[in-house]
Image (cartoon, rainbow, N blue to C red; front, side, top):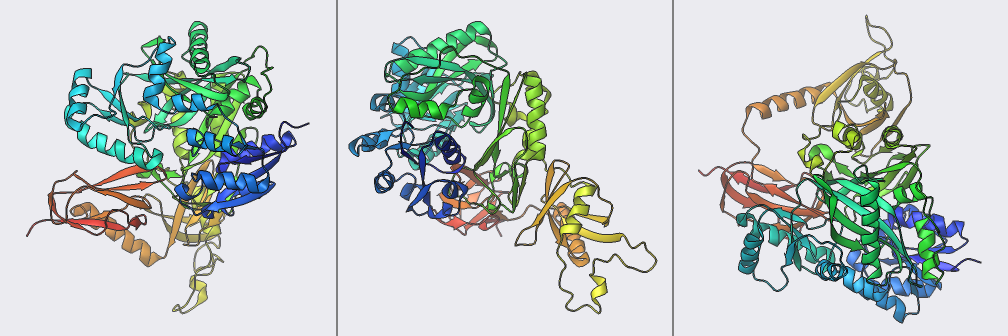
Length: 632
């Protein structure tokens, strides 16, 4: 008999689909909730039932406690699985479930209350003997008091929102002069993401490694750990690649880390699946400090599942139903590595990307947890992570090779992703050697999209739809027969504009070998996947190609563009200079927020500022935000 008859999943995307898989295997009916933006999403179609809970804005849908509880009551769900993010670590949500007589598949109220606040969590686990990073709470402090306390603590320091997680709002400060701007940004992001702008300052560990330990606790007081995960490869404090076990940790340190994690969990009578996160210096791998405890399932939980054979969602369900842990001794088999696929443009500074998924095809032989399918819409409303690709092998080297091959075989056309960047990262000698630290990605040179191969251009020619021949003397000029006077019939010349703004052309249209995938977007962009690389190409006429080449020459010879354009679609959350102000090159002018990330737009040169947008405006990618012109 299943532990529950029906469970509602208070989340979306890949985690909702992943929970549905376990529910189905256990014979439990699933209920998905969705916002207007997700009405056609895969997690909605795959659930046994689905309930609309509000508009696209998360605060009025996935974060609306009353709406989620009402959906559970309307469908007769006995329990709610919160996934991760959204309401998963919200004590008020846990209490609301209890009042409604619905089982919250997560820890008890005490664990949620204590661990939801980084400051309180630090103090609490320290009392249980768990080592913590030196630092101070900025709660109740004025800006002047914060500067004084930070100066006394010594630089560099890391500013963290007390109520949040996932790296959102974190800011590094290396001098007192940087504190004001960093605090303002951290508070703004924290207030928007978590409804609480309290900040915590901690000593910045040099050459840090991010190591976390998976724990499970039951209602009978038993707590076990399932080994550690290495989550060091991060960008802007967001994890990119995770693996289990860590190549840094030896058997003795693993034992001590496990004991510390179990102590932290036991100190709050932890129930369910949780993760205790530690920071370890690459120079002193035997020394570790508690950072925080995530009172939920983690994005990277599949690597633990693959090396232990334990379905963590099933364990969550059984624990929530009151069953005791019966795992026995945990055995670790092989090595697992996960790469997060984000909808973003690495060549544009990793800015979030949006669009329609024209074609999605996952790789064979590995585990892929995806939020999207062919036809899905990727919007700016939610987190940009759209899939995870996870490889498991006998050892780390084999797992790395398997993951790289799987990423090469993963096809996603229509939306920019970080897949090419992930393959570059996995090939880095430092990553291969396992000697990385959390600053590795930031030290890498700026990423450039791979130039389209000859095979990609041929595939793009084949996929390019015929254009209208209005105004031409004969359709032969645009026909795809390849016919022309004095030339072989298999030659066709076509120019394309690449995502990097370069004009490329091909004259061979019938010589491609090997597999390819292609799709054409509504705006005419031709997306092709050939040889493990995805290219987005815009077909150009000869006249357009010539105009682009001339414009490139003029830009190279001219001054910087006076117009400041939106680097991504999103909302204007801050304007940092007044209309008519005199600004200098590199000065922050406007901040844009999308997909839980904030990006500053800076002045390209000295001049007088003319603003085009205001705080609260929604902007498109490349929309003009302001102009900086030289004074007359």
